[in-house]
Length: 340
Image: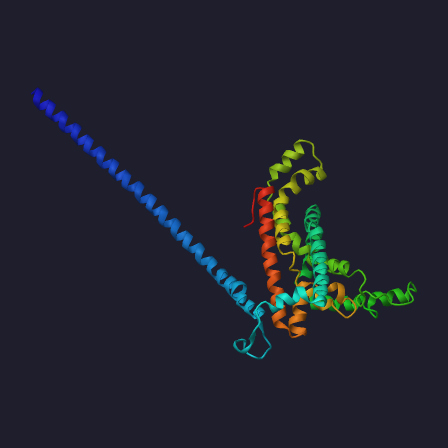
């Protein structure tokens, strides 16, 4: 009897152990199954994200990297419509011409001064959109805030050709502004706003600010909307007024965005664009309005020297990449954060 009881206990224990083992195996398999499903889901999500950026990668290759093949024109004496294969290979002749020809060197020097001045002024005034966004955010009347934001953003969508048309209608010697001043007998002769070389850099800066201020503030407005309201509540509990909240909460929260945009502006120091300066250039202000991009266009299309223009543009691109690397290194050393 005792033996049979022992055998039944042993069988029960064995059955319990077997059941526990089976349950453990099933749990392990379920865990592995869930883990496998999770890995598979992550891979599928990664593939979907990759497929989303493929069109943009294709566009970047087509419009940013494929045109770099055109740098080969800087090493030939290319004269259209002669094919490049029939053009004379001149090596570094155009690069040497930029530094050995005194007249060319003087012109490039003035162009670089104009470029540095325009870019420097744009960087010095780069905080204007931040200040404008903060001021716009403080407007309590929603309809008035939307009206100001709309009126200041619309100029960004107007082409520089139309901007110059407006400027000519208002500030030419026969424009509305001069006509009004003459009718009021405040001036005897028209003021030359457009066909004059005085204060050219300042004029271009003001037109650029007018056109881009509202658009540049959009990113800062989005940043302000993303600030945690608890930070303002904590500041109010500490007795901070509205100005102190802006100084100690809003501005510190926007500074990372500002520094990233500032670093990108510095890396594009030589890229002023061409549209604005092209439409405002004339025989009177050519000396101080011709920036590097406009000079490359005038040399290549105006003087039909495409090879020299390519050489200048090539050096400009290399310098811009160098500036980006330098700014990225400085950002990593000072802020511990890099943009590349």
